View 1 (spheres, rainbow, N blue to C red):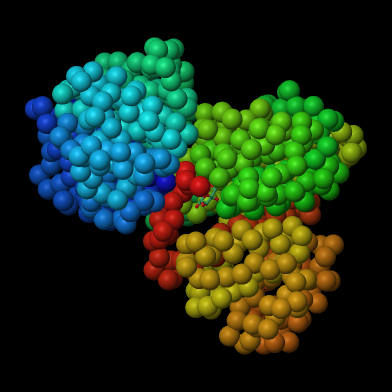
View 2: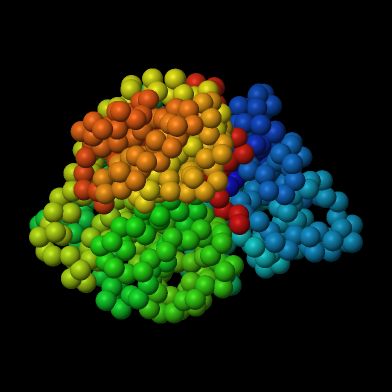
Length: 604
Ligand code: G6P
C-alpha cells in the first residue's frame, strides 16, 4: 500500500528514484511523484497514473543528488495529481512521502487550518509537511521529532528539507521501511527490491525509530531521539530475483519458480529424514490446547488448508479466521492457545492487528512469513520463514504454495512431537513433503493444456468452483485468483452446499470447475457433478492422475500428479493459477497490477 523511496549520494537522484519506484509499483499504482533537492530549493513533480506518466511529465528532469519518491494506492482522497505524493509544506522548505494512515489527521488539519495553514490536497499525509514547517527553527531533527510526536496511526515517512543539502530523515511506525547502505550513497525504501541493484547491506528500522541519512552516514535514533546501534544485515538474494527474467509477466515467472521456492522452503527443514524446522525450539506443543490461524486473502486460504491438515494429524482443535474479522470478535484466548499468523509480505495491517489482539490476551503467536525482519516476524514469539524469494506480481502464487508447504511441515512436526503419528508415518509424510517440488513441476508441465482450456472457457461469465474439504480450500484460492487478475466473477462453493440454493443459478451458459482430488470424498463429489450436468452446465474437472471415471462426467479434465491425500491441496492449485493467468491474458488484463489492488495492504 504505497511505496516510498529516498536517495542521497552523488548520482542523479531522479534516475535512482524512478528506477526504485518501478520496483515498488506493485505496492500501489494510481499516482506517483518525486521531490528533489538542489541549489537550496526542492523541486517536485507528480502525476496521476503509472510511473511512465510521471516520467513523461518530468521531461528534461530535475537536477540534484538527494530526493524522495512515492507511488500511491489511494486511501484518503482521489487518485489525482494534487493528492499524489510528495506533499510540500506551505513555505516549500519540506517535502514528505508517506506510507500508512495518519489516524488523527482531521484534528491536526483543523488545528493547523485555524493557524492559517493552507491545505492543497485531501490526503491525511499533508499534515506531516505542515507540522514540520510549524516546528522548524533551523533544527531538522528536532522538527521531525516534534512533528512525529503529534501523529497517531501507521507511518513510514521520508523527509527532505531545502535547508539541509544531502540530508534525509526516514521514520518508521508500523509501516515497512528499510535502509540500504551503499558506498558514498545511501537509500531508504518500503522494500529492499527498490535498491537491491545498488546494495545488499541493509538496516531494518524498528517501530518508533528514525534515521538521519547523508551520503556518508546513517544515524539511527530511538523513539526519544537518542542515538542507537543499528541492526545491520545482508540480503541473501539479488537483483535477478526481482526482475522478469524473460517472462512476459512476473506472475508467470513466479508460477514457474514454485518448485525452486518450495525446495528452498522444505529442504533445510529436513535433517536425516526427519523434520526439524528451526524457529520452534521454544514452542512446547504439548501445552497447546487450541490453534487459531489468522491471515488475509490467499494467506487465509493457506490457513484453511492448514486447519484441515493440523486437525487431522495433530488432533488439536484448529480454526482459520480472517484477520480483519478476528480482531473485532472479542476472541476467547489464553496462554494455551497458539495463534498462527500467515503473511507473505509480513506487513498486512489486519494480520498485525489480529496478532496484537492475540498477544494482548496472552496467547502465543507464531508466524509463517516470507519477508525477513518484517513487522509480522518481529511481533512473533516463533517465526517460520518461507523462502519464496521476492514476490512482485500482486496475485500471489509461490507465496501461497510455500505457506501451504510450511503448514504441512508444522503439522507433521507437531504430530510427531505429540506422538499422534507413528515414527514410520512421520517418515513417510516427510518423504511426501520432500517430493512436493517435483509434484508441482508436474503440474506446471500442464501449462499448454491449461492455456488451451483458458482459451476455451474464458468467456464464461460466472464460473463456480466446487469441492469438498481440502478441495474446497483450493476452490477458495482458485476463485480468488480468477477474480483478482481476470476480473471474471466467480464463486467458490462447498460442493455439498450447492443444492442448498446456488444450484438455482446453473444453466447451460454456466461453467463449473469441480475439484475432484479428494479420494475419500470422490463419490459424493461425483453426485454433485451429476447434479450440475443435469442442469446443462459445462464441467471442467481437476482430478488425480489415473482417475479415469471422471472422464465419463466432465467435459474436460486436468490431471494433477498424485501425492498423499493430505498434501494434494498444494499441487492441485497450480493448474488454476495458470488458468487464471491465461484467462486474464485472453481478457487483455494488466496481470501483474490488477485494477484497484495492492500487494501489501498496510491499511485496515
Ligand atoms: C493482498 C494481496 C493478496 C494477499 C493478501 C495478504 O490482498 O493482494 O494476494 O494474499 O494481501 O497478504 P500477505 O502479505 O499478508 O500474505
